[in-house]
Image 1 (cartoon, rainbow, N blue to C red):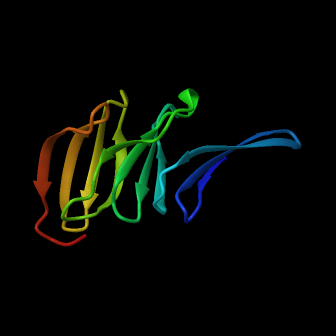
Image 2 (image 1 turned 45 degrees about the vertical axis):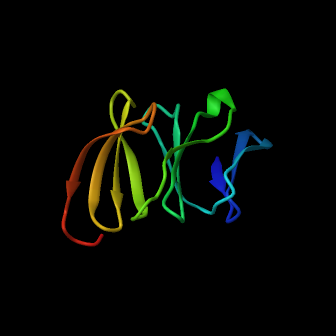
Length: 117
C-alpha cells in the first residue's frame, strides 16, 4: 500500500497477513496530488499540487528525483508509455501535451491542444 500526506511525505505499508510495516520513503516538501506506478511497478511518479513531477524507485529506497518543474503551467497528470517505462506523457493546465524521457526529464515532443484542460 502506497500513500502520501498533505505535507508531501510518501509512505509504503508492507502488509503480509495480519502483520504490517510502515516505511517513510520520501519527503518532497510539497503536497502530492497523484501517484502513478509504471506498468511493472518499478517506478512511481509523484505529481504535486504545484505541478512538479518526481520519480521514485521503491526497490532502491533512494530520494525522489525531480523530473519536471512546473514553469508557466502546472502539470495536471502524467503517465508511463508502456511497455518499456522509458517514456512518459504529461498534460498541463494550459493544454500542452508533452512526451519526455523518464531518465532525465528531457522533452522530445509537444502538442498544444489550444484549450485549457
